[in-house]
Image (cartoon, rainbow, N blue to C red; front, side, top):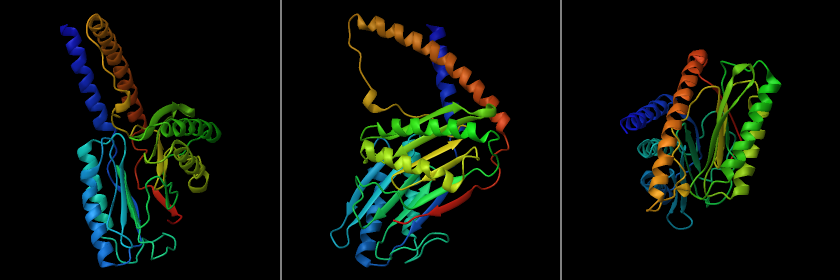
Length: 320
């Protein structure tokens, strides 16, 4: 029993450390807003944005509205699936502050022309996305505006093999994310690329989308790779209002919470013995697997050290 307890606590320490050094920094990626001053609309917008961080559900998603026509404001927030609730709320607070400070009728340099009557805005951080609009957005797939970013420090040497491995991984994750329920549409995994380059990736949709809408959104995002950055860089991302994906050659996600819909309970009686047996076997196997994975990740991190210096380029196109 003492050995099992030691293994259990060792596995927890490893999981905590694994989560602590794989999560990337929460930088602001880009934002867009075309707000035109209207006192009533501004009041409704600010009230709604201020409340978003307190309305996030278990999976870091929130959608709400404020006011009546013609000054109704709709807003939505979504955190990355591995982000802890407190960090999620902090990200949403920062994101809403950014949107509230949007200059009247202005858009950041590089953004396309926009209709000033739309009164919409969106901001992407590494950990979350927040958007607002005068149009209802729940259950509506939005593909624009789009943001492209890619790694400028390292390219794959076997381009076709890397393209095939990445495409297969992203398309698999596209389907798996779309199959998620109304609480979370997210999938992550990794594959072995050419030249000993691992590929880690995730795909995510806002959970208000249907399965088909999520697949379509991610399919369009994946098809943007040749337009923005080609298949050469070993890291890249495409962000849309309703979906996004990212891939890198090093780990960048924290521990992903289990889907609450998969939770189940065990009964009493003779099942207790079976349950204890399963726990013992799973704990031992899990600890061994975690040790192997951590050792593998440490070797990869040492190998890839220095590959991520410099600021990735950003390309933006499209409009609301």
